[in-house]
Image (cartoon, rainbow over all chains, first blue to last red; front, side):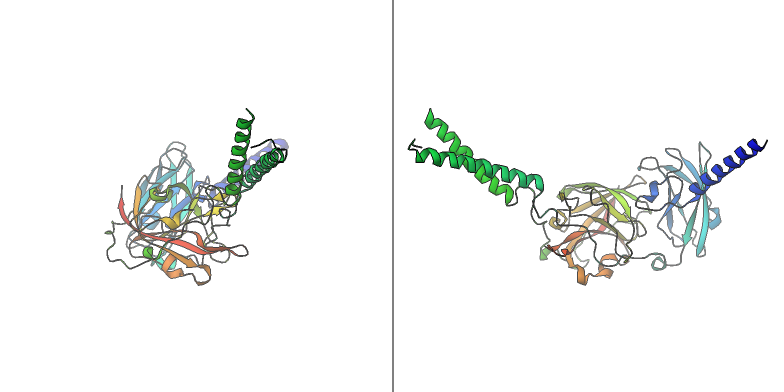
Length: 177
Length: 206
């Protein structure tokens, strides 16, 4: 009996851990493809404009989205051109108030539910942080010669030196060139 | 017979000498990346191709610039701790990135794409960006299945120490695109001195 209880606790823990992973927002360089989360573009939406919702949680499956919290009702997510990802778009009502709203996406076949936040701001400027300054997109590697090429150049010069030496040697011996 | 042998050896020696000098002095495909001329500078919106209506937001998947042979996937980019735009992993030479917290390419506003001019192994995805001309076409494949078509308005080069943030990253009233890579001269101690920045606006979609 005690053993069963332990097993049950273990199962519950695994379940809890799995749901934590599923609920964690996707971050990182390719966050949109990280399994589990909802990704919203733009990162904050102005009332009256369109939001794009992407998820990799449903694989190649279609899904239904629910944005009724913000008053936008239901929307459909269809497989996107990005492998294993679905995309859906809906208009945020012009009357929507600024704030954070929960959206729920349900995969059509698996029935899996994924939630994510929609951030509504009154102006674009308030929601967006622009980068600053220059971008470090080069190291000068195209300017110096690469090691293989340098080695090939040295080898070619060695062949030339050997050939030249041999010819000079024959000439000195009076073999006639 | 000996004469023939001598001629062959002299020829091989000559070819080896020439190719050795050529390889060590730069050889194929190396040298400074092309930089834009003054003729490609920003001149305002007069005379530009008419702007196309904005597209709904959708993350992009790929960028294509036929005039300079670019066809590369796009990864999402964030900001560094100092607030500058982060860059794609340098070891993948045919990979560009887009600023994910900003405007998606095709919607109203300024979408930002960046890629390396080179990495330690040699030229990378935007090596020839500085050779792009006004009127050139940039296509961005979007994940909603559409293609955003941009026309180049200007190709500028800016020094890092005097970078015009507002001009490059600032908001726009129509769908615009910036494509950024390194440029503006190179010094062994401090690397590239600035950035080549391509300004473009949406002129079509399909």
